[in-house]
Figure 1 (cartoon, rainbow, N blue to C red):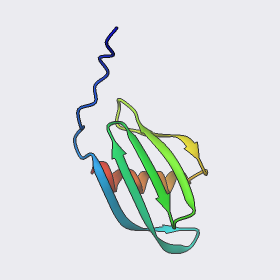
Figure 2: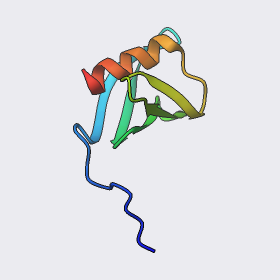
Figure 3: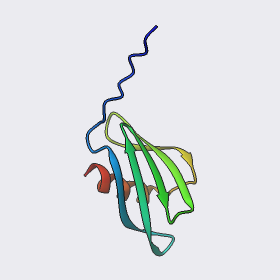
Figure 4: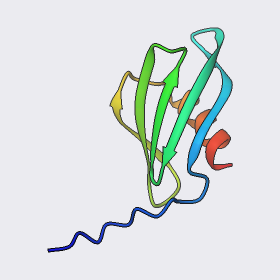
Length: 80
């Protein structure tokens, strides 16, 4: 049986790096987007995975808890 899973790069796939205020400090946030998954690293020690839902919202699926305000900021940086 052949797996027909879509592996075509989605819009805006790639690596991103920007500054984010987290815990009262400005730190580096790195995000790697792969289709509907965002792999997030904040300040080289906080890691999380976010899923892009069909309605454009983000849901955290794994890793350290990230505040909703930070998730919204990441969404604006990556998805516009």
